[in-house]
Length: 402
Image 1 (cartoon, rainbow, N blue to C red):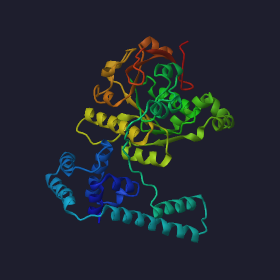
Image 2: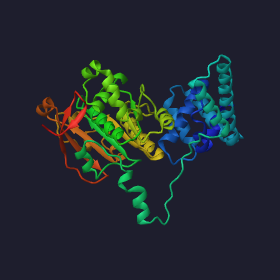
Image 3: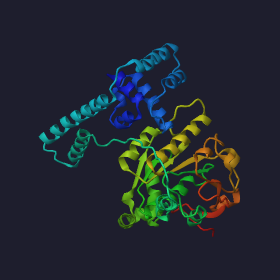
Image 4: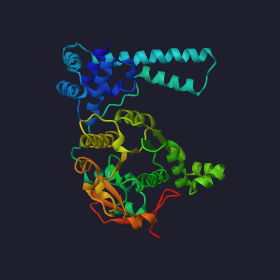
């Protein structure tokens, strides 16, 4: 059955979209888990692919596995997919029915124990969704025929569709904001304030009512949460410790419920897609891009793949993606950064971004908390004038220079 399931996933993207949230990788064999991860990578890398090229899958197995005997065995399995008589529709139905059956048993057990609680309600909702065939996340193509200027402006270029990017001078630089589907990259040397910059952006997203998913794999989650709370409340962490009730009041008034932080270690783009499906955000933050787990032969290729995945994530889901990555040694002590200052990928990553925001400072500026925001790539407005600013580390806020 496992081979038929994997074969069905390679035949048609729709099958993959319909069951990717239901397949438990730990229930697959060792070989099945590896092949599944390759299928996941294939569809994630190219959001236009309607099926998996089995020859490419075989080639990637050869680079992933050291033992030639094991490689030959896996290739035999993959090539066999093309010979299997598989009904994708029935395979999908079988997986959904199996999942529903398991959930049904769990619901029955909980009710027998008198547990008519929120968890049981959640399971009932999931059971109903599975039995009704809902929850399908097929990716649709966009086709534009005889599109009028007025329709284009109303649907894609109205200010109502823009997502403000704080601070205000930056938002003005990009003509009022970014659109869903855009990919923004924030990069800087170590300890230059990349996370502070992104936290300041997120404060703007929340203020304007945009549900935000923050995927972090660098800093401890409690540290990020405290810094987010400081930025939104205007209270330092010490003030929050002294008066947590006041902080809670302010957070409740300032859309804190729109913020979700998920700690990954290090995380895959398959995981991120499942989180997007679950929380339905308008903005996704990837902090940091370079830590994401992707299959690659070297660091440069890994970063380019990660950037491609991030861009496809934005386009496929209609969300704004903000990625964070490290700058190279060439950016050290520089005020204005350029494309060549991205660590290990001065071509691949820039090619997958709509807006690049570099954060730089010379030693004297760094000591004073002064920074320069530079824009080596700006497809949003075409302007590249650097912006000086002040980083307030106590509140994780980007301010005008003092």
